[in-house]
Every structure is written in C-alpha cells, then in structure tokens.
Length: 421
Image 1 (tube, rainbow, N blue to C red):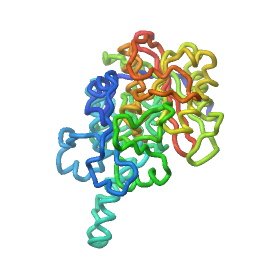
Image 2 (cartoon, one colour):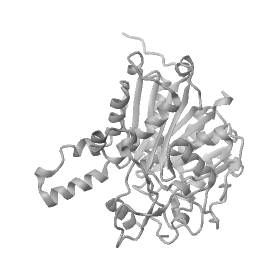
Image 3 (cartoon, rainbow, N blue to C red):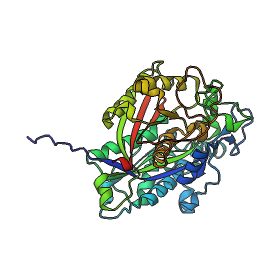
C-alpha cells in the first residue's frame, strides 16, 4: 500500500492586478476613480429602456476589444470573454510573468462568470425567431458558455495548468481566487490567472431583476442610486467588467524577481443552506465565511484594518452583512473601516469579487480606505464605520473582502500587505 501523501502548505502572493469596469479601462484608472469617490452609474445607452422600471447601470464605455484581441476573433466572443482577456493581459503585464515551455504546465487559469454570454444568447435567439434555425451562429455555444473565459485566456497565454471556471453568482470572482489559492498552496500549480468577468447589462437580465424589485429606480439621479447602508436605498445598480489577479507561489515569484503586491493568507467559503435569494437574518453563513478566513490566515479579528464589504445597496443584504461583521469581529467591528465600492462600480455579479479583491490590495498598497459614496442618512440598523463619502488615509496590514451570492453561497478573502511579510 502507498502511504498517504503529506501536503506541504506553500505561501501564495499576488503579483498582478487587472481591472476594468464602468469607472475605467485599466487598473490604475479604476483605482484613481475609486479614490476620488466617483460614480460610474449613468442612464443606459446600449438599448432602449422604454417600459423598464430601472433605466440605469454602470456601463463600461469606450471598450474596444480590438485593443486586446484580433477583430475576427473578438467577433466570435461574448463580451464577458473579451473583458476576461483584457483584464488578464493587464494583470500579466504588471506581474511580468512570461508563460513559456518551461513553466506552462505549472500555470493555470481559473476565471468564472455568474451569467456568461447572455448578450450572445439574446442575439442568436433573435436570429432563431426571425430567420430560422439555420441562421443561428455556429459560434453560439463557445461565445456564451462560462468556461470559455478561462479557455480563451489559456489559449491566448499558453497556460497549460488547471483550466477551471466557477459560477457561484455574485461570489464567483472571490471563489475563483480562493480556490486558486488552495490549488497553489497545496502544490497543484505555481501560478494561476484568476478572478471573474461579467457583461450582463442586457434588457432581459435587467427586466428579471426589476421583476424581483431588486434594482434601484432612482433614474433621475443615477450617480446617487447605489447607496449601501443608507436608509433611502432602494436596490442595487447593475455593473459589468472584470477583475483578474495573478497568484503565484512565493518562491516561484521570488526566483523570477517578481514584485509582490500582497500575500493571500486566508479564505473562507460557506453556504447558508437557507433560501434561494435571501440570507438568514442572523448572517450565519457570512459570519462563518469570515471566521473561516480569519482562522485560515491565523490572525485575530483586531488585526484587520479594512473590510471591503459585499454590500449591494439592498434593504436586507446590507443589514445582514453588518450583523455578520459584528458577530465575527466583536467590539473591533466598531473600529475597523468598512466600505462598499459597489457604491461607485455598481454590482458586477461574477466580476465583483475579483474587482473588489484588486481594489482591496490597492487600498493596502497606498494606505487608503476607499469611500462608500452616497451614504447620507445611515440606516439605524447599520451603525459601523462605513467611510462615508470620502476616502481616508489608513495604515492597512490586513484587509478582508466579502462576497455573497444567490443560493446562499459565501466567500471571504484576507490579504496581507506585502511589506509586512
């Protein structure tokens, strides 16, 4: 009989960040807008919103896929795949990771999406109805299925390690990063391109959420519509984009002289096992995810200086996350800075966890707690320090990033400042 293999835990670091969303195309452009407290929410221009209760979104404007992909190839891809390729290219450029025949088998790709290519599905369904089945594109399936974001990035970069894709609703990006961390930690790869991408600003998707009464209808004041923890919040705002990180095993990164941006030290993943869309009132699943991440990081709650919250600007979700934070952090919950950058980016669904992980690392790098804009009249049930309106200087050694999704799926990531290693 074979003796069981002993698993040696390895340290995992971040060497590259690629961000694009309604605030800009490029990591530093997005970060500067976040620091300045700018809103990316505006009236929808991509399609006619007549008859729709919510007419606003955080659209990614001026994105030209041909800046990153050949024209013929780009036309065969769903918009979310284009976003994933663009953000991955940005992250790789920052990390200076060169994938070649020597390391390709040890470099993976793990990029997910909550929705996938809904834009392609709608386009080809229209062709089916108006022109018949023979006019449906043969590229329908590869243009829309979720794993083609990871697959396309793998083909573009030559990465031949694990090629995976998750779909865990709004926790997708965080789960993709967390599971990549575990793969590297236990030796399954030396580096992984990971995160999430989403392009769900479509009439059908928005109509579905509007029917659930989940969207803000503050159509006359788009920039003020996303307002987490404010007592006048009336729902979330749909966003789009991608957030990609380059994770590497520490020694692998050191050997090639990579600049380490942060260390990923903790990850928690749980399920509410409660309801398809609503969290339990006591925030049990979110609380356990935070606790598991703290335990994995081997730190105490009072060592965390900043939390990038999931907070989407919904009545129930914002209150429940506040309860979960109080349960997990105890008295320190009133001392830690907590903010929701969704107040500026909108809710990017499958991309949100990747975007917010990248933003959290940049907050540590520059010593700045991002603001929660539009927090003018705090909900009495939400009484933590949410960094209202303006960014704040803050020395951050550890940051936690929360992501929760439909189906009761929860994830928390904890990053440690690079200089504190």
